Image (cartoon, rainbow, N blue to C red; front, side, top):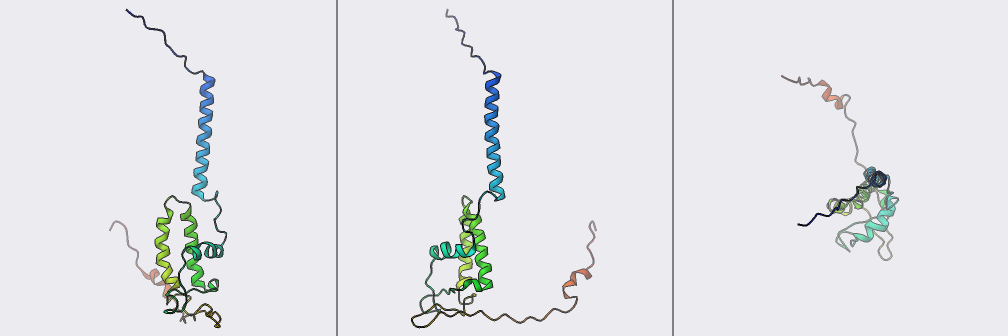
Length: 173
């Protein structure tokens, strides 16, 4: 017969457990703070401080297209004074904001790229905000023209209050 050896292990002391709990609590606090900062967006400034920086340093070099008069050097139009075109500024700012958000997400570009490829033909196409502009060509200077704004007739008085004349739908009927 063999006798069993006494192999009991002393459980960790209270002091050791307290140290482990403190260490784990600190890790949980650090992870929670990091998650909160990532969710709030406060921890990370934009990669490009302005839409102009983003257009100049990222968009145009990364997604370059041949530009010029339609049918001449390319099918894409661009205006060196893009910042004077309100429609272009609106589209490019939306793309920049979306890019800044997508750039910090693991697969954010998968959602952002289809938006870019949808908006590029609108922005740079023959009906886009740059339709009256052309780059310099030889001795000809660059041409920059803002499209005319469509005329507007004000709506008749009360036109936008049409819903106030509606009878409310009663619930439970």
